Image (cartoon, rainbow, N blue to C red; front, side, top):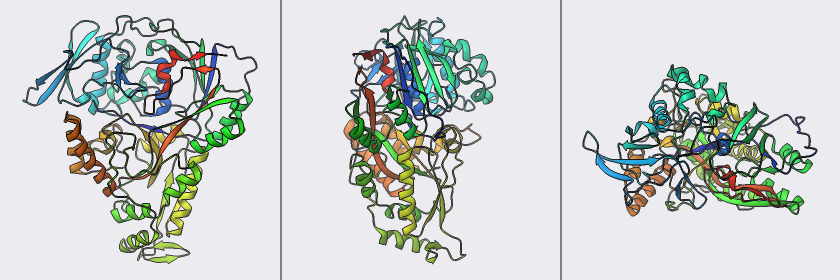
Length: 555
């Protein structure tokens, strides 16, 4: 099943809003600082790392990719495979190559209100996911399931319309509690606003992880307490509080004052900020850097007539000195990106088009595109209209705002006027990006899993519209027939060598067409108390909180 990607960023909060230190924090309490509040708590609506991070405390996917980059079971007993009989090749009704994959839910698994997790929840989740009016971020992952066989209350078989190389990975099939959500889904087009995940967010029946959420104050904090119905290893902390401090300078101040115990690596300080923090306070904290599959980039609105011209997109990239940005701001720890595929991924290809800093090429392309005249240093077309764009990102992230200013300056040197307009993350991701409301440029990051086929971000069928209730993550509006074919063929090719060839072609198309402007690949910076043990960064889209029961205190 296709792995979706997740947006990450940070948002601003008034500087006067500073959390007071916790006077006498109990040893069995943990306070985590992050930079985002989820736009929704529904696991399948809107893809946002802030939500995945807190869901790691409260929920468990059926399968997941672990810190060793291997697919494992979390909610199932045995990972199905052709070799163990859990997966069987079959033909679909129309004669195509399909596959049947069987899973068994752990017998002890139950929702936080004591209701057993059963195949009823699996079937209901599938019904919601494949409904085009539900608002689910990626219907495709559900539509490809042709039918579900109920073997018993805990065992089921997916009949899937294609044979994919990652057929056993259903980490994006996020279970919904049918006993709570079915009534909310009576009107599918209204489900997005009626779901209990937002209208009754602290209902224990929504959760099945080590913790349940007992308090949620929008934009401020979430409180999680031990789930008495959790069947796994007992977690070390009675209570975990996730405080949202959207301004990164304020986040640092709260750590030093004792208002929080740690800063989440997934949603905290950028590398440059962490390096500076480590120089000043490294003796008091454990600071860890984890390079990962985190792609910082600028999505381009290809419906914008100016950006639909490939010469303009190329000129924008040639006008940027990304290598200098990486070296001066990040000490070279965040390498320049040429496509969305990270060098850490085995499918990475370097022999694609590179757009190294070249002001002369940028100028020539802008001339060819009809922006030859200049007035007050800004290029104009024959009608005297200035070459002007708007760039947006998540407000309050000090590093992102600095990068924006550098980009703005470099583009101005090329005669391009770029105006900055930033928004809080829950608005930026909840509406502006998701509903394609940005005019020209949206800067954020995708975090993905190893060899994650980018169907949701690049396939022409994944463009969000009002008609599909804003489903899909192809926010740029990119359309390319060869890319569409590659995205399907890569998924269904079981031979690694043949897939590698197709991945190479995908990266060639991406670099040539530039649906987005690649910036650099990020690393996560974890700032932890020295007494916290067992937290292991993964380097991909699945957060450390999914293994919170392994965290421990060692004073």
